[in-house]
Length: 88
Image 1 (cartoon, rainbow, N blue to C red):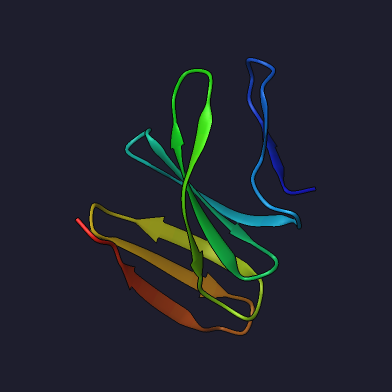
Image 2 (image 1 turned 120 degrees about the vertical axis):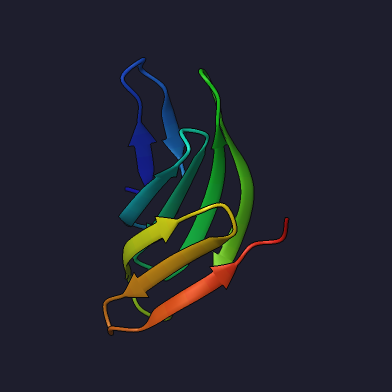
């Protein structure tokens, strides 16, 4: 349903379709990939999940995500792999 539920009872609506991949970076950024091919970046706090940015990345469902301090690597159902370089 496109949402993530936390153990403290909060629910965050991240996408309007199924979430197909997640990556947590340094415990502060949640990166979500959707069946639509959209990647969204969220900043996590104890109580909130705040939207940071979207990346229109793929035409097929995202199947895998990986991140470091300057890049997000994503792969989709068609086998396409994309390296996204993030602004500092």
